[in-house]
Image 1: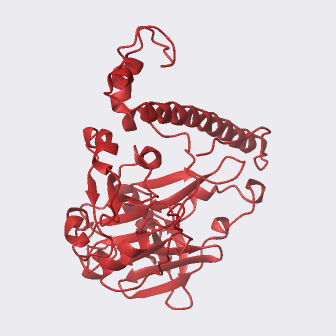
Image 2: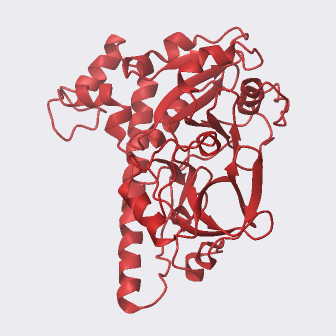
Image 3: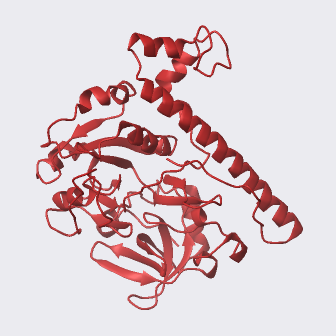
Length: 372
């Protein structure tokens, strides 16, 4: 099959490759399925997928048997993160609306992942093939710099540009500029918007270019669905009120969905996530480069930044140059990532052992995760 060009229909859902710029791995996959054509995963449900080939045509698609949702690792060799997710490009065969079949998954060029909820080690893909992630946080009781740092840790190293979007800018009482000074020092863009104001589209315009894909992440009640509606210019997504006691909202978005914006960009709204576990693949140093630079000046190479003499990190806190809460979060996340990395190594060894023995991988005892 000749690789497709960036036609207007494909471009509208994020395809920006020409036959000359198509990644070699994608070209190989297309050549292996000459009767197939590209489509993008728009929705992912427990029962299956919905895909689109054009802006206004979304259809259910049957997936390969090995991608069917499994209750545990005993019921299939394919791990959840290896299955298609919202934002993925796939190859489909058949004619819509009743006979579409997904026959291949094109390799991802980026993916936002987290450790899935539960005791056992798994990874969950939040969105795939994304250019930008909007980390959304409300300037009310939802405002939490430490949670923002956790989101940024999950994004770091993914190949995706993070942008912190502070909604509810019409609210008073939150000094976001001071609280997020560390993020600006790390060159993470921070933008404050009123999610109900159409001017929000102008503020976020640099990341809403045609052909770009953006995912919204943040807690319930942060204003993700409201912002989506404003960027769309129509009330498409259901929104809800937040509790006055803690500014938390209920889950109004129940599944991930890819939506085309008037600007030509594609937006993925996601349900609020109450638990943000690392996968073990994160690079803490990227999200806390300021602390890592100070740590290099500590007297002892294995300084834990507690009571050791000559600790440059603690000295910076005492001078007021560094927030003690940021250091505490750095230490907490470092410990969580190290624990998840060990679980990941155990899981990979377990799968390698199973392949050698010709048996499905078995659960190792004592697999636990740190919690937010």
